[in-house]
Image 1 (cartoon, helix red, strand yellow):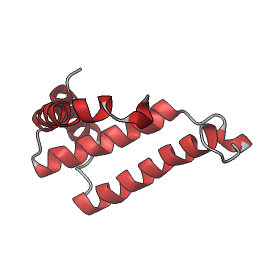
Image 2 (cartoon, rainbow, N blue to C red):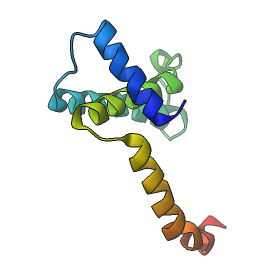
Image 3 (spheres, rainbow, N blue to C red):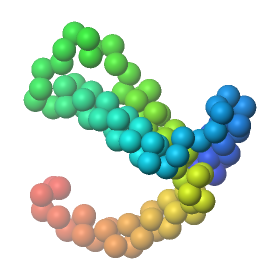
Image 4 (cartoon, rainbow, N blue to C red):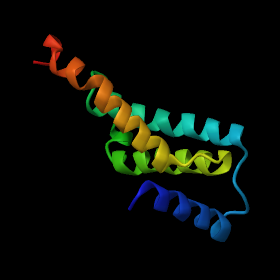
Length: 108
C-alpha cells in the first residue's frame, strides 16, 4: 500500500469508526506515548535493560503500526501529503548521504 493510500485508509477509518480526529496537540501526545512504547520494547529486547516478564508478549510490529497510525492522522489533519514528503526526503537523503555513508570508516 502506498503512503497516500494509507492516509486515505486512516481518514476513512476516522470517518466510519471515530467521531473525529483528536486535535493536533492530543495526537502529538499520543504519538509521544506510542514512540515510548516502541522505545520500551527496543531497550528491553535489543538493548541492555532486562526484559520484564510482562513485556515479553509485546508486539513491536503492532507498536510501530500505532506510531504510523498517529503520524498519518497528524498528516491528514495538517494537510501534509506524506507520499510527496517521503519521496522528496528519500531523494534528498540519497543525493546527500550516499558518498558520506560509503566513506564512513565507522560503518565498515
